[in-house]
Image (cartoon, rainbow, N blue to C red; front, top):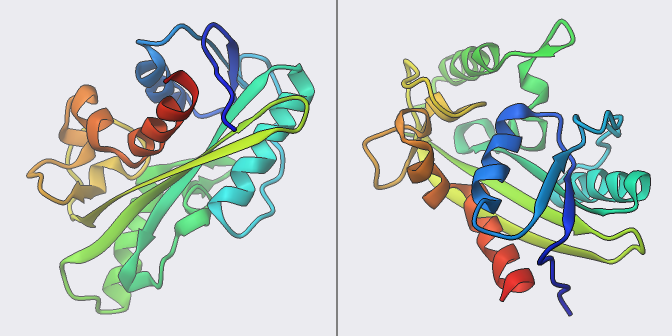
Length: 203
């Protein structure tokens, strides 16, 4: 049975400023106090699972244990059909350069790999997101969302974060990085997972 979140303080288990901004926008209408793992200076646990759910569980439970608060973790990534589902759970790893994340590098690497394989356009892809809520007593709840689309090159737009400038969702003429934040948040993989969370915990 789902547990309510109304009026609670929630730790968002992320050190990604862009992801935290999305969470603040999504949770804006609800009576909830948000604080990020980065603001609390929590260490980032090692993500050792080969799927989104497993890694989200690791992050959520680590934050809940460290703070004694309910914690929300997101694990998400881009799956590209022509690359056999890569980068998938390793999406952030593809952006690692010199100990920092550079998604410009990740997108160039992706385009180079598609070109090397001679992959024909459209380059079909999807963003997937799994959200896990963890309570300090070990209770967990999980919610999933996805959005299908294709990849563009050259990249387009300056909004959003991560692979947003390369991802064109189905039914749109704009990449995620060309959309206003409110429009992206209406249709994104994260917002779809978030809708399940809201239905379970606020209604």
